[in-house]
Length: 333
Image (tube, rainbow, N blue to C red):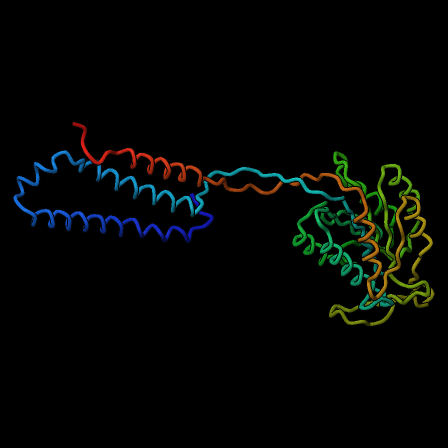
């Protein structure tokens, strides 16, 4: 047994104190009666008093008080699984973790900026469930749909180019992976949010978007970077920039934002494309779009919870008080 409000249990000290008080008053009463006159005469005059009943009445009132105090402490034992109904949509975020996302045309860099926007999006969710797909040359689900924001943030913090060995930007594969993360048994609106610089490497992202559209999935795309492009920094083991990525000819590689592809992906599903900005205005616009969407029931199962048992002690207290009042003060003739 455990108690949800154990502080009330300290009030149980009142029970022995009341017992001592009743014992003291009983002795005082006997002493006062003895001073009134002949003990034998007094005994005959009080012969029909229900002394045993009085003791039982006091005991029942003390028991009732103890039971009420325990009820206030909310005793719990046994467990049950509780479910609640939420209203929301299912959102799979596909985050590009390729090395081109380390370009610094958005400060501090594209990837860090994207992670900040995802974290901000989590704060704006009210009843929605969010999952995360990481992709570069390959893609995988970093965490499935969940409303547990604290745990989701821990997985988000770990997102970095090193988590996927194959480099590149496979947006089409990311869309296909994100689609597997939805619960098809639910009627809620399903949304994919792609955060990338848009430099896809032959994975037919528009074809994947058309497939998503056929399933009623809406895709929003957010482009990180600039059309003019930015070099891709390279780091040593200490995290210091030691130069910039070069191609086979020794030329510095410039990573450019491919807005056309991202616009086509969003258009294919009825979504929208946004370019990421330093002010983050695109996230407010996206949140507004999500708020307009159809809300459907999402049943979320919580962990097992202990069962409240205060009702039993409250019932015992009431029964004891009723029984105490039914005891007569005098014996039946």
